[in-house]
Length: 169
Image (cartoon, rainbow, N blue to C red):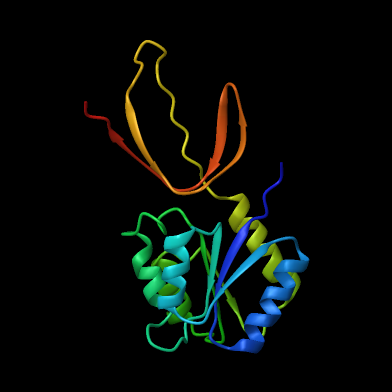
């Protein structure tokens, strides 16, 4: 069973949003759109995307606010974020990368380069793997929001950020 990777595009310009959506859809991604940070956070709380593409110049909160929330948010912590912005300042690019952006693409953008960078960010994602000694038989409580993409009698593959805590009786 193959699951489409979901990409949240946070862009206030309708034409740019439509262009990015078309490019990503044609490449086999499912696109979720948001016009501002508040709308994006609502989407993220409903379902965490595999990747976020954010413009920096947004109405209300800037795209930097998504980056500053990244480290403190259970939902954003493991989600790669790409900046797609018209700003081509070394200081701004450095700040975005320092805040956790996985990559930075300037507008106007080359669609092939954009797709290559997206493929790389999705491929380089780290997944949580836990190993326990068979004698330990640990009791864990897992809080999960995501999608089980494959399951069998020996286990499952889940695409989601996961928070583990010791289970109390």
